[in-house]
Length: 168
Image 1 (tube, rainbow, N blue to C red):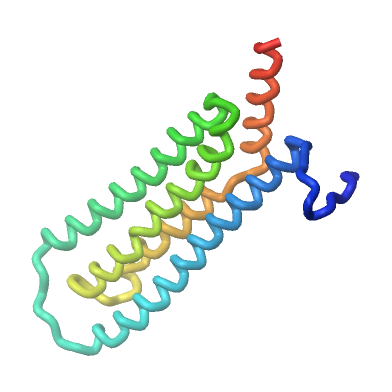
Image 2: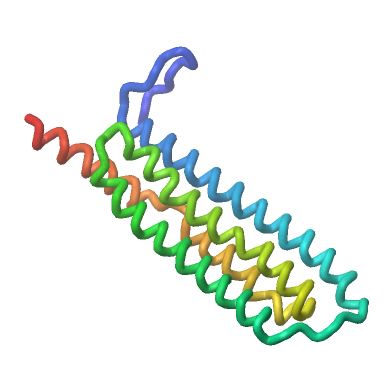
């Protein structure tokens, strides 16, 4: 059990700092997911009104472009998470927390861009739920994949202990 710290007493335990980094990162990714949920709710409200109004039939090129954009966002989010996540353990000790944070929050933010694409798809192509659901499911799926796990943070801790051992 850890001793409690006074508010003005700085922590010297690196495990405590890593736990703080994990909680800060999880909180930020969850905030992105909450923003995604609110954006989806607003999009649904806007598209509900659009479904009742007559509209011209769009070209297939618009639909295809929006789906390609969705796939590009999903790939960019996944690649960002993998590449930045791989860099964090090898980074200098002072930058690890920063890279760990952005290797999780960045991909969630990139995936969140699919919600406005879904609104555009619903507005321009089809406001039906079955048509826009892929644009709403992708940000949630990739956002939940972006949530950091304790094991990832432990990898950062192992890297810092290996750095300390190699410098000795």
